[in-house]
Length: 427
Image (cartoon, rainbow, N blue to C red; front, side, top):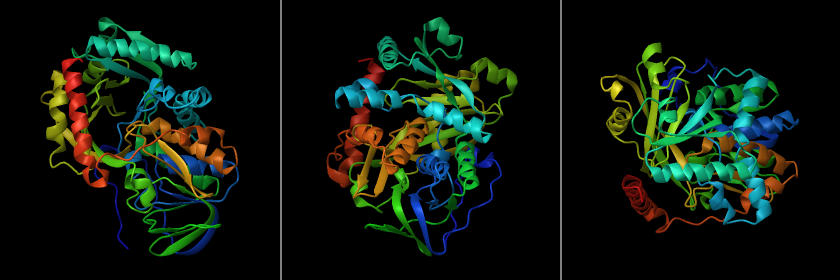
């Protein structure tokens, strides 16, 4: 059996020491079998284990191997499409439920970190940078929109205000979300996986699910074993492949690129981000960045549709890094990596059920750190028979990509080009 290691990244290099989990061997029974040991799967497993269920997690590679262990590490509230879009698609009661859940993920992360003593460099505060006056007006509208749903932790920043939190000339203003923040993403999921095991849950790495047999007691097969369960939770996201074709038609894996510089030293790091907030801009194809615990600049951006690995990640990211911080023109890049996330046409997550006992959540569309932690709670509630919040997500309409699976990459890239042009011209 092949052994898949973590891809080379700053996070893998600085991960807390964690012993590998054995591959699944032979036939086993459990209450819930979770496919995928990223944030969605581990969050679901932890909520269920806390409630006394027997949980078995199957992971094709390592815990946090996919987007959960490679992302920008930013705690960003709401969804990839904001609540004004949600309001146009669902009835007022569903909008109320989805609106409340839009701000729950960050709270769940903080509760987990505190309850289980997870060492993941948690820091508070996230900034949205507006590169033009139109984006600044949109942030003002967003602040009002979020306040309607009871979330009042956003502080608007004028040009001088944003220069006080991020030392760049790029932004005309912005917004500071005091409920945002940042973490070491791989250590967060590793810590939660340890919590699952401490409650009796079982995790198998190097155990890719190759077939799901549906029925009253579904069976998940791997190369060397099988798990029979009362319920199955599918949490493979961009790494699910064709295991369940019905879930692949309405989503598309995409790659995003991240680099980590050499350590900058306290003085330079503090001059760039004095309060150690994380930052993202408001463009359609956005840049996002923050400082690591050892004062590296972690800078990400760009999208590769279809999730191909670009030949030279540093060449893609460095120009935007230098445009943002000319002070880093000569800085060395120590790590460069890519990770896949799952995009939906609506850019809203897809949540649902196949038959009566196979649940899934996928398609965070770039807002996965917070959403996945809510998803875990919602899936666990649904399995326990409390489906109100699950149904609110399941009611969101979803559509196949134009052109089907063959042409979804060029069609989506064309759409992204249009939005990129719109950002540049300030339309």
